[in-house]
Length: 349
Image (cartoon, rainbow, N blue to C red; front, side):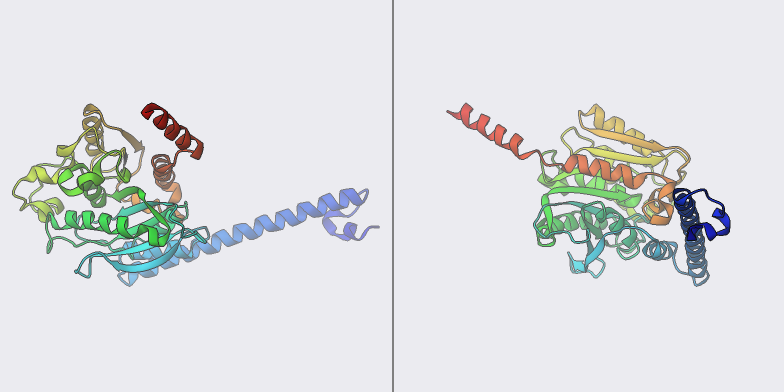
């Protein structure tokens, strides 16, 4: 009898081929059981991390960021921390890059602005976003900015603009292409990114369709929310603005802005989906380029959590954001550029 046939499960197999096939089944079953065990252990570890974090009064974002770091999966890496773009300690940027990415200035760039009601959230808490986006082949700048109520409108919009200028000036030193940038933000961060680009008083030539900012991704963002709710987050952050319409991205909708991707969930009761729907209509009416993705059953916080590895199944926010960013930052083929140059030369003769 062949030695493989001595296994109780495959005793009596007719020939060596049958024995080998049966042995492969045993091994495959063992691997599957091991993977199930690993998933259970990792799931319990994640639950323990979150439970301990909340019991120790960690903020939810820090616990989420730690869980993302410990989860099995690919991610980019932090290559520079706390890069100052202003004199205030809050004005700092963390830079993430893909693993083993060359520093040859060819990586498209994403600049991330976090949510938090214009009053909370830090670059370190949103490391899970930096790792997720950079793992997809982008140089990523995660921006810290000054918070309300100490720093009210337009301080955080000035920070949005200044961080954009800093990244444009320094992206190449980290391997990024300063002429292929995408702004991205969630909640208050989406508001800041949209307002900075759409209001030319802030963005200048950076906010034009053929400029270095190739697109803006607004995730669960407020864009049309006057009047402010008395005592609400927007009122605390922007209630003292001399002209309240200056705080509203929809007021600056224009056709020559970079393409916009608006992402929201129809279960969002914090920032209603009508904000995205109205901005879409205003941009399209002005002759601009915008697209809306509305996820069924997805709430406000879900669109931020979905960037973290353990919660990617909540909504395809990462997939859709990256698909848009790749589309708008795609470089034309070299032969197409050469053809265009030759055609231009012939027309000048």
